[in-house]
Amino acid sequence: MSLNAHNGFRASGRDVVADSLRGFAIILVVFYHLITSVRHLNVDFIYSVCIYKFLGSFHMPLFFMISGYVHGIKDRYADGKGWLFHAKRDFFGLYIPCIVLSLIYFSIKYFLMPHNSIMDDTPTLSALYAVPYMGLELYWFLAALFFIKLLHLLFECRVKDIRVISFFWIILFIMISLFRFCLPEFITRFSYGIYFHAGYVIQRKSLIPCGRRSYSIYGVMLILVGALCFLVPYIRGGADMFTRTAAAMCINLGLFTIFYTLRINSSLLSLCGMYS
Image 1 (cartoon, rainbow, N blue to C red):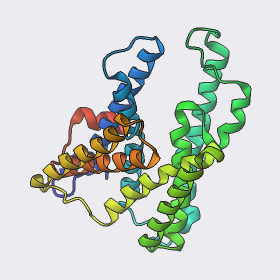
Image 2: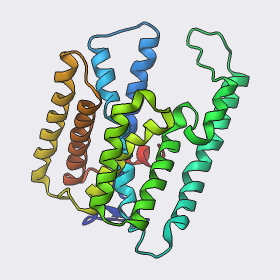
Image 3: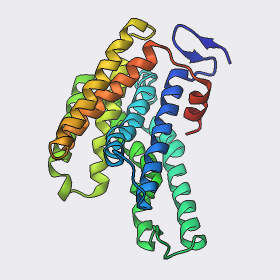
C-alpha cells in the first residue's frame, strides 16, 4: 500500500498513525491484564499495584479517544444521509459483532471450561440479560462504544455546533462522576464519551500539528503532567475520578502529539492496531 506522507493515509483510506497508536494501546492492554493475572496468582513484584492502577487510568480512555479521532475524519452530516444511515452502519459494524462474540464467549466459558477452579470467573445465566446493552466481560468496550457513537451521531446530525456537543459531554461526565455509585453500570459507561468526544475535537479542530517534529517535546511534557496528576493523589491516599480523568486526558493527548508529530508508522504496531 502506498502512503501519502503529507496526511498519513494509505491508499486504502486507513490512517496508519492511528493504527500504530491503536497497536500501542493494545500492547498496554495486554500488559495490564498480564499484571492482573499475575496478581490473581498471588505473585507480586515491586510497584505492581501502582503500575496496574496507572495503566488502568488511561489505557481504555485511549481507545475511546482514538475511536473519536477516527470518527471525526469524516463529516457525518455533510453527506445528507442523516442519523439513521450512519447508525445502521455502526449497528452492523459494532453492535451485532458485540452480541455474537459475547454469546460465543459465554457458551465457551459456561459449557466447555472447568468450573470451581482457583480463578473461576464463569458467567452465570443471569449475565445474559445484560448482554444486549452492556456486552459480556471483555466485549463491554464494543457495546459502550456503540451507544456512545449513537448519542454523538445524534448531536452531529441535529445540533452540529461542536461547542454545544462539548458542553453536553462535559456536563454528562460530571453528573455521572458525582452520582456513579447510585447509577446503573450501563449509564456510568457513558462517562467514556468524554474521551471519544475529545478525540473527535482533536481531529475536527486540527489541534495537533501533524508532522511538526519539534512539537513532540510538548507531548512528552503532557505525559509527565498526566503522570503527576495520577501519582500525587495516589501517594496521598488515592486518585478520584476527576484526577484520573485529568491524568488520562494529559497522557493520551501527549501520546497523540508524539505519534502524529513524529509520524510514527511502525509495521508491527500498525498490524496490531488494525486487528486489535
